[in-house]
Length: 263
Image (cartoon, rainbow, N blue to C red; front, side, top):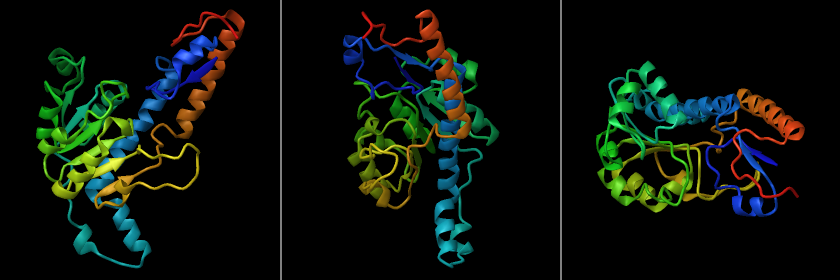
């Protein structure tokens, strides 16, 4: 069997696994999965704060021996701004909690989201992505990659986004039209925080080249959303527990592709 702690399943060939009798199970509903949600939301908010205060640029100039308080003393600040969440799963909901602490207004959209659910969460419902990006000062993306979401953040979306808005993607690179994003950065001064990229290396270390990171106002991290000690320890412990249960009883919680046969 194979265990995955991720929200998306696009990295696993489920059909082939089923054909070969390999059972896939997920930690998605387990406590360990919840422990991977928090660090992703933390990173997304870290990128928001870093972009607003231009933290990376501050550090780079200090390390280069330059003092420029005149330049870096300028920031909009987050209080009273509007955060638009695209995707209101568990990560999106963790974002709501953090936004409240910063006195940020929250609006949200997802395919299954309703005004009633928005009221329960204490945020404002919007009927479409276009409404979200038109109104939001900060847009944060939290959706799984599916055939329906592939490339759905496109030129139509960026066209209505506020000039100078912050755009955060800690979900999947493929849900964003990269060329449209690059144009928006150049023409509308969109500030961007990315944890995912179209040309990521398949190994933990290696050479990396992506035009998007060379554009002004783009901050990037190395697809590390869930990569904290707390999250990895929780995942390891839960994987051992579920694997043991599978070995002893043959049953698997949260099975994704119940196999017809064993290998």
